[in-house]
Length: 97
Image 1: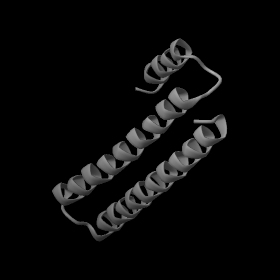
Image 2: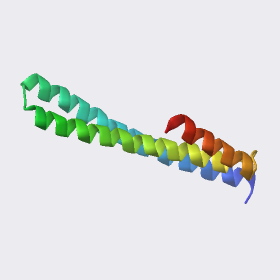
Image 3: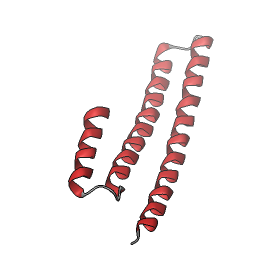
């Protein structure tokens, strides 16, 4: 496979991941707006807590997608050998998890 094909595959993968992250973030944004509305309406704290949990879950899933994207970028970088890619993945996990 040529470098151009890898780059094209990487770009396609990145675009797909970006769309998935945006979708999850939009879901979380809607949930946060819903929480704000619930608070304004004076709804019970347990109901609000349930929505907080859902919003946190949506953000966590978007975050995991972003980490996956970072790792795949590191692994698909044609300018790095396997040892460099592995070190980059380790650095990503150390920094962001």
